[in-house]
Amino acid sequence: MPAKVDMDKIVSLCKRRGFIFPSSEIYGGLASCWDYGPMGVELKRNVKEAWWKTMVQDREDVVGLDTSIMMHPGVWAASGHIDSFTDPLVECKSCHLRWRADAVEGKKCPQCGGELTEPRMFNLMFKTFMGPVEGEGSIVYLRPETAQGIFVNFENVVTTSRKKLPLGIAQIGKSFRNEITPGNFIFRTREFEHMEVEYFVKPGTDEKWLDYWVKERFDWYVRLGIKKENLRLRQHGKDELAHYAKDCYDIEYLFPMGWSELEGIANRGDFDLTQHAKCSGKELSYRDAEGGEKYVPYVIEPSAGVDRSLLAFIIDAYDEEEVEAEKRTVLHLNPSLAPIKVAVLPLSRNEKLTPLAKEVFKRLCPNFMTDYDDSQSIGRRYRRQDEIGTPFCVTIDFESSEDKQVTIRERDSLAQIRVSIEGLEKVIEAKLKGEAFDASTLWATREK
Ligand code: GAP
Image (cartoon, helix red, strand yellow):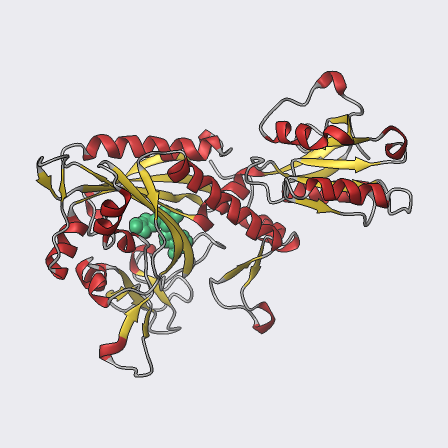
């Protein structure tokens, strides 16, 4: 079943409406790097906030952390990334393009049909040098996952948080991977943001917790509006498990290029804590209650990409509808994710309407991410707000200064209700939380 929208349309909407631009565009761009514009940065913040709220704020058993991107090189030796964080690379002997061997069918270059070299293992970590002297002794790596910052702080967090196991430690932050074949817009890039929890449990309870987290994470996407039929679970085969994993499930989404990984939930066993204990010489274990059993915890890891989730949210929300014989492009984003919650739109730019419209804007913006727009026709302004997924538009018309009322127009149903300016914040707050748009107060049905 192909996805309903192709990626070109998504890339174009993202550029046109200020979600995502090619990085360094005026210099011709930089492969696989992207910049988030005014709408993109809000959406990204909202994705991260929704994740943090569910994974940290709403729970008793998870705490947060923010660790440095560059870490002691010993971390990456212990974690196995220096030896095993590799992809098989082949190069075309004619055009010299490089490919991931497992992404190429047969022995010919997909670009020019030339002969390919034998695969060699290519390490995906970016290297740089710390301090003014470049040499073997000053090599540091940009982290390829945020997880290791959590493992090396396990002892610090357990001691200071005074929490008992099972305990999760959550982190959101940038990761870097020198991917051989990045692409599909922001799906696979060389710089991206991770949202990861390392959930430490007693050995023997790990399988139960893996099932728990797989379900929790699947439900999170559905609660935020992704259609269930566009999501599926896939367990990794033994031959594809990462070097640290005992078991792993991918939540896959039906992206325009087909079913692809959205998030991985792995059972990392005691691999990481055991390795760091061995290589650092510091004991990393846990003792149950007073004088209880001592053990090295197992770890369940739900690991998601901010950028990839954001892409899935946009694709799933994207729709083209016909409204009164005209095409309407709309993002049916969950209101909590929408970059702008409410747009204030005076019917026209007019000296009678502007002061009241500005007053309404000033009332709303401390409470909600609010846009003010008085250029072009009202119809075009509605279309723009639809395309960026704004759930509510507030229109100020010539009667507003008389009756102190405004019209709220809802993005999905296009229904409109008339409400008093006095109670506007309360109404919008309730509607954002999901209160129904009351049909009995329907004022007009469709706008021009
Ligand atoms: N710590 C475990 C880990 O990093 P992963 O499956 O390699 O596991 C987890 O990555 C998630 O991070 C992926 O499901 C994806 O959402 C995101 N991700 C990984 N590599 C990415 C890349 N090159 N570009 C964008 N997102 C990426």
